[in-house]
Image (tube, rainbow, N blue to C red; front, side, top):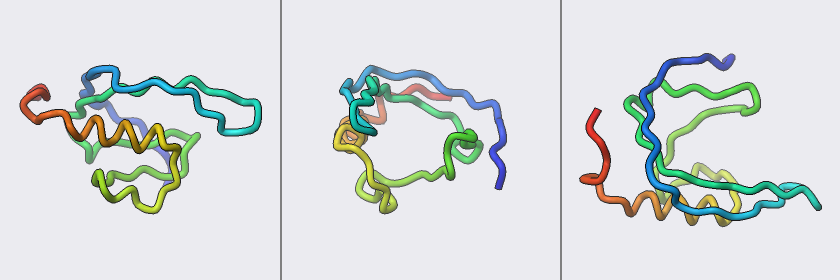
Length: 88
């Protein structure tokens, strides 16, 4: 499957967390994570720098290994009340 581009309605939410990630020795990346609100998850697509796209529940990361910072931010974003999310 080749990546495609679709127009999505996405609204940026609050800054949730920041941390420094070291994917390779002596290669550091500053990660800033924001919540976001997406109108239609079914229209999401991945870019050429990725192999796949998935949607997972908070407790089901799909067997994906990820840095602790990502797991922490998923739980923080899941704690946001649905009433705080905008209507599309």
